[in-house]
Length: 130
Picture 1 (cartoon, rainbow, N blue to C red):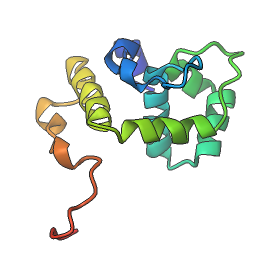
Picture 2 (picture 1 turned 60 degrees about the vertical axis):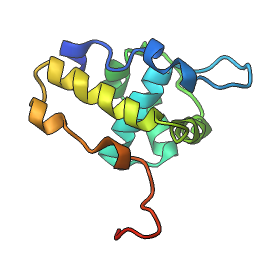
Picture 3 (picture 1 turned 120 degrees about the vertical axis):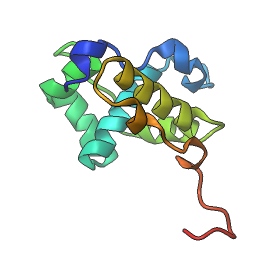
C-alpha cells in the first residue's frame, strides 16, 4: 500500500472513460477496477476473493480510496471489466499509466518501467514460440 500515500489516486477515471460499460447502467470507477485488478493479480486471488477483499480489508479500501462502510461490488464486475480491457489497447494503457505514476512518485526506477507493451495482453501469434 506504499503507492497510496505518494500517489493518492493511481488511475484517473478520465484516462479510462472508454472502460465504462456501454449498456447505460451506471458504472463503477474504471480507475478503481483497474487497481483492484492489479491487487488481485499481485495476491493471486479469484474474482470472488478479490471482491471479498474490497468489502472486508482495510488495506484494500485505503488503496482504493473507499469509505470503510463501502459495500463493494459483485464479483462478475471484474470479469466484465477484464473483457473491456482486452478491447484495443486498454490493458496496455492501464499498465503504462501505472508504471508512469510509479516512476513519477519515485517508487520505480525509469529503466524498470520499460515494458514491451505490444505483448502485454496479446496472445502469441500462431508462428511464434511461446
